[in-house]
Length: 348
Ligand code: SF4
Image 1 (spheres, rainbow, N blue to C red):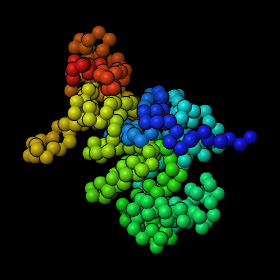
Image 2: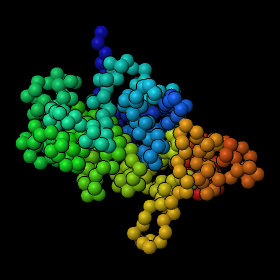
Image 3: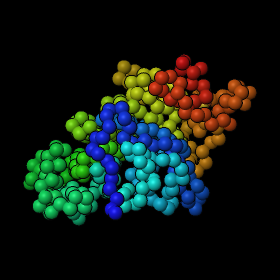
Image 4: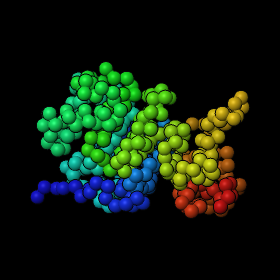
């Protein structure tokens, strides 16, 4: 009996998770040692919701979604534990055939570098229509018609005339729209956008984010936005998970996390953003560098950079920042922080 995918489009209701990632661990086994890229992250995404996963380069955010999409390079990358449930069914326990048919109608992804993600020797229409040919057995004519429809939907002008053009004939912003059209081809329930605007100038960035928001409003899909850009997060996300050294160190609604952070790393990120009203004053960058994931510091991984770290005799019993790993725990309703001293530093 052939396997089927029990993924009714937009099943459930707002507030019911479509995707649930639970205690996910990913490591890379290299000749230089084991790199712990994702160290037990947990999150969920509901229908129609935007979750931003925010972090510096090397925080593990992109690897975590590659694991969700099943596109980790294995070896050297391995999911060592955890679960990734789609409508309650663990993707990691599905056959590879079933995982393949999940990609597209279930979960789709927009990559950050459209030029290197698109195939230079095929027209954009061919690449967009290919999803329909591969998943739905569409004819060439049907696939081309669908490609034109999708190009129009993502705002590519003169789609009918441009459907046979090649990626290099489009601007960076238009290429990113092509990538979004490909991702939307099968009406995914979850769209993962990995730094979708990184290579674009500011005005085009805003247009792409507006397009993603409009498409989300139209389709009801859940959106996972991977970014290091606080401005992008602030504009479009409902909730944010802040990642550091392969872990989520803070999570909550965007308004709460940005106005009253409960973790020193998030607070540091906020104070390092230029503010129009404080023009001429010095920025407060977080000192030091993110840790090497092959040698993550003991205790709280942020402690070598944390201005509030308490170590040795300065620490409370069982809460030495250089020894004890803080749990991500609820510190306020709907707010989680992975800091031993969250309440002391930021109040209940
Ligand atoms: Fe800083 Fe300690 Fe909190 Fe880590 S646990 S963020 S080192 S105060």
